[in-house]
Length: 637
Image 1 (cartoon, helix red, strand yellow):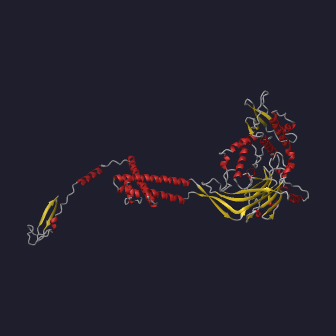
Image 2 (spheres, one colour):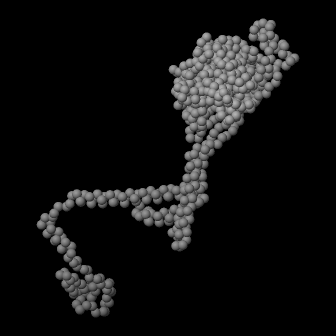
Image 3 (cartoon, helix red, strand yellow):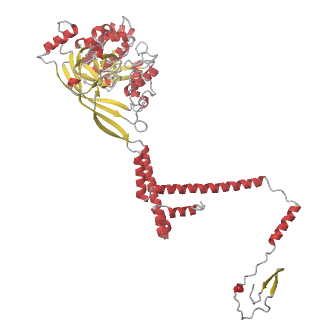
């Protein structure tokens, strides 16, 4: 410090301004007073601008912004897993004994609704079938019926209830004049909690929607007591459903499919699911190198209320992932040939602070109930099921059963429908717990489909096609298929190219350093060495502060030590010795006479010398003798 900036802050600042390579500080010392003030103001102002810009750049770097990059490539493509289901989950011939009483109640509800719609008369009282169902007798459904009501609006604007099915009571006054408009009433489900304190009305725009929802609730209550083996037996059998199969020009059969029981569509069959560890790849695009299947949906054996649509439902997805056909599946119409071209998109997310995704799908807060690979849908439904079991005391029929729980039914859980709809409203909110806990995987593959269809088979060829398909399945010359039941699917890659949508950092470390240097050089004309100089000055300031602090601390410590331990009283001998020492130090010191500068005088041989050559002059000064000695020639020795 003594060789450089000095021991004070002022000296340090002056030293920095004189030696720094930054342009502004040098002008503060070299200019006049007015320019010095101007340059000081400019230096402080531009230094503040640099700090502000640096803060903005660092904030952008830490914000985790990303940019998406689209790349295309060509390679042998992994053929996706294809799930095929019949829209009707159970053959009616196999489930008639279980579902026919519920079908009769649904027919009764429709009759009462449309009877009321035509003449505004109250429905007849409850018949024996409804009474038996409510009591659970005669092998009918478990527990009471969910009330189905009509909310009518009178001419005075008052709303009254008209009972259709269930335990709800009508509250229509005898003198009430009901509205006659076509939209003056609404059909609703009357749902109440288990203790009956809280109730709600779930309204529908048409009676068809209301009866369909009412039927679905009682259908799930029935299925809660049916074992998986019985449900599988009532569903589609593979040999009846899949009539022919061809992949890449080679025949395939039921052994190439994996059966999966879907809670909504019953028995489904998955091609190339990869359960055995091997997957099929495609090296060439086009329909000849894809999958071709012919399906028989047996529309004549449909349940009239369980499925109002006819056809097959299919979905393309990754291997070993659960197919959520109810939300993501697509329909195929009977009597048509559908061509589905496939485009693959690979998604790569960064994860961490850059995007909300999970690099390790197994490390999730939600226990997944599906024995498949992790996906956002499996996590959400597992979370919903956990909330359902915890709040309602039973499990929802369309989700897998958690350990120790049982499916909801009207007999053991009379208020489960109210609890389910109340929970559904909470889950559908934007800030639900499940949306916070479930995070999509960082790497995913999505399939984009383009569908075209034509009528199949044609009228000219339908006869021989029906005969061949019937004979191959039943080994009988009798025709057992028709246009309303069969359909054909062709699935193939249109091109052997794929798109990769990947995320990358919008601001890298190189970007940050270059922008920091650019801002500093633009506003201050500095470089990295200028920053090093500034750091050196800051280090010197800290060092000076440390030295001053140490001095203050040592002085304070010395004063405290003297205050605690005062010096001893001096003795008489010490006092006498101190006075003698003080007297000697105060004695005047004899002064030395000024020099005689003529002592260097050169004497002439002819010039007379002092009075006596070779004599000596003695002078006493301060008690001591001082003199000059002269030579024989009169010169001072």
